[in-house]
Amino acid sequence: MKIVYTPKKDLQIHAFLLFFVLCNTQIGVGIFNFQRSIYQAAGHLAWLSVIVAGIFTHLLVWLIVRTLDRYESSDLYGIQYDLFGKGISMIFNSAYLLYFLGVFTAIMRNYVEVIQAWIFPDISSWVVLLLLSILTIYAGNGGIRVIIGLCVIGFVLIVLASVLFYSPLKYAVWSQLLPLEVKEPMKVLNGAWEMGFSLAGFEIIMLLYPFIRNKKRVLLHAQLGIAFSNIVYLIIMIISIVYFSSCQLERAVWPSINLLKIVKYPYLERLEFIVISLWMLVTLTGLSVTMWAITRGCKRMWGGRPQVVMIIVVIVTFMISMNIEEHIQIEKFNKWIDRSTLLFSYLYPILLCFIASIVLAYRKRKPVNDEGDSS
Image (cartoon, rainbow, N blue to C red; front, side):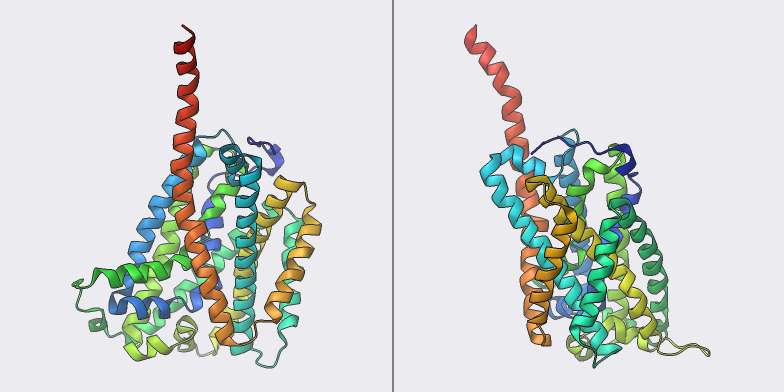
């Protein structure tokens, strides 16, 4: 495996497009139900947990970009190969592939559940799974530039959907945000822990880095993308707290969709049906980016053909998804992915940064020591 990889110019992208990629990878189907678990952990200070999780994510992205800057043009797979050698890096890279496969399955299965719960209760899971799989393979065959083009369109839908959440403010009870005093900091931190899965997706920077032309601006646009995602989550969380009662928010399965139910126009009702349907495109961008991460890893490690890898991923996803039918089973699967996310997206990149710093510093000093010994 080549440690340093420089793609062809027609495959490279500008750094500002990273903003749209991160917005789509962080804001997906999880925006429909992220509030409940955070509110159960932090109570009325759940909005503060969102801020804490966002700040930590900003710091972590700074560490990730700093690690990438130590290499001329490499990705996660190449860096691990350089630091750990062929054998150990193969284990770590394969673990990341399994993690991306789990995320891909979770995104697809959760969106299928939303479709079945709100629009087509009697539709079979395999129908929606097949539709999403075909669209994902079609987008994946177009390459990274087509996928990023979808992310730009997905960003427009995210902005338009976010504007619709203004209606519940007419019924807001702002006193439900009080008191602002933090008496139990651990609750806020537990809420930030629960928020981790919703803000995940920024680790895609470690794979896209070689494809970015002006790498000096990677950090800026990455931070802007994460800031936008965090603001969207923060606004929706605050609106949820001031609109729902405590019991309602703890029980609601899809609070964000419940908020959209009250949005009505004289010429248009049941707007949530339209939003859920259009959200398929936002979901498709998350699926396409994750699929690209898997095919990229297989190509880097084993030279696997992307088309073959995509078919294998879709088959495995079908097998897993068809065996997860009940809502309780889906929640358990989400919890497992949530815990994996904290490891692969948050904890391991910190460890990788410190290992890279130590190893590269040692390599720089070693020639100097050798010269001193020979003299």
